[in-house]
Length: 439
Image (tube, rainbow, N blue to C red; front, side):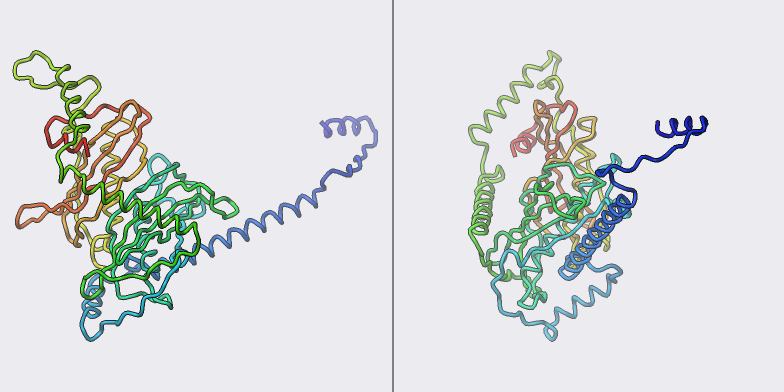
């Protein structure tokens, strides 16, 4: 509007003079200076963030459960053979008291800043592949364990850590592909040879600070073995600094006791109790009510239901050296990722929509998987709640023994999903399916 009036005055032969700036107006020079200061501040924050990334990567490499890039597989096998010989075995340093803060280890996933990294993690919906994050969680848990077990100088002890169990992994909010994340892990409980590790994943603000509420929380149980004998190895005890840490350890002890009690009451050891028998009977009545009068028809599906045995989906993979850890076994995070991806595929078919991961229930790594093994993953929808649009998928992992034509169970994963659309009710038909449903 100002330019139009000025043009009219010029055409009329009138002089145009710029109005003097008001005292509270910002000049262009001040604006430029402010923008430069803001840009400089952002660059400094970005530089500090990159320094944190580099430092976290250095720690992960030092206490890594994965071979370094470019590591030669056969050379690593020879090195392990040499290290295990009696002449080269390292004596272990005395145990030292470690604080919880001593084990604190961070890792960063800067999806917003690192486009190459984002490309590796992004899924077809523009979100983040949870299976890849599960690998990172297992890797970080291993680094925390080795850091806690290190001697007073921070050097690695002659012990080997294995992931014994994953107590639970809860996704509290969706992960975004245009956001930076920090993974922070630390020891929260130490026994003779085992430890519990808590990991949380938090979004990072533009200023480089972690948000208060975590997006994801996970608990891992790691077990130490003597590097040369394979027997249980004692690890550094925990020194509790304050009441907060004492409460944290007490909570971990309670979780451990609950797990023990749950393991003792499993259906593998005891028959169904009264409440579980009532559930079985109710399911049987539902199929009887839906039964047709056709000859030979003993049970029929209720409306909007599917037989449990019809929800099976499987896959087979060969374990190559690229999926190994430093102990020359298949990396546990690799198994978790493949199991999650299969469960997601099965959930998509089951609900005919995109399922959303909610949690991974506790499970144990029963046996290590050797490089070169042929693995069969089998998934089934073992439980569903249509009223809440939620369901659970169990994924079993079996090693196929070619010469004997047999399989050996190594893991059973339980993934919880939700769906934006209708979820069918899954109905067990055989006694075995009933047990899966109740578990």
